[in-house]
Length: 73
Image (cartoon, rainbow, N blue to C red; front, top):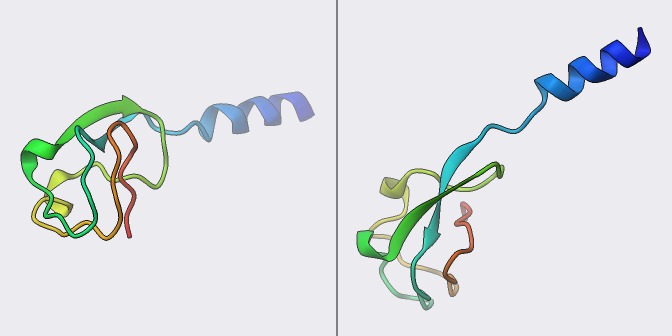
């Protein structure tokens, strides 16, 4: 019974596979983020941005590096 419960929890708590945003180039602090600066990468990460509309047109507060997921804040 204990093993069945552990297996059930493992199966149900899997992170979802989804696309998330990553920069294509280094975006320096105080630069405005353009649509051409971003691309999507597939994976299963939590706490990352997946909607380009949330980011495009905003000013980067810190340097954003290519291939690293964008996180809120």
